Length: 167
Image (tube, rainbow, N blue to C red; front, side, top):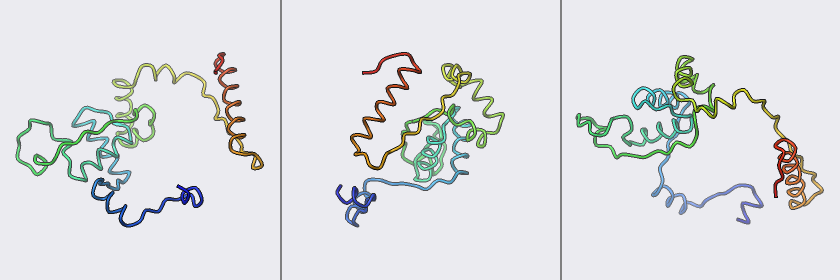
């Protein structure tokens, strides 16, 4: 970790790279492949996938896992013998209107919004957005002091915007 702290990067030696290659596989996914996976998830699985999950779906398929053939379908195909994989969706498409619209078209977004958009997220659409808070780091301050200042500012935001005390 001292090397990481001093260089801001982590270089692994060849032994570690080989160990990781034995345990993990990865795939590079283009935007087009991500969009295609999003379409297939909707069309073949009746599932609206977010961009992150669509990348995982596309990568899993590229790595040879069975995704889009329904279980129990005994039709002979090369994918029928592929191992099954489970993918955990980590986000909601409701946060990615632009990407979902590019992948599925305006009608696809409208269909998602009508059928699957979370109701509690719809309630948030009419609320006023808060501008981001930018914290500055005074270069003459130690990290602990900067963190205390940022914590104080964060608590003030919560106290004034949400009318409650924290800690």
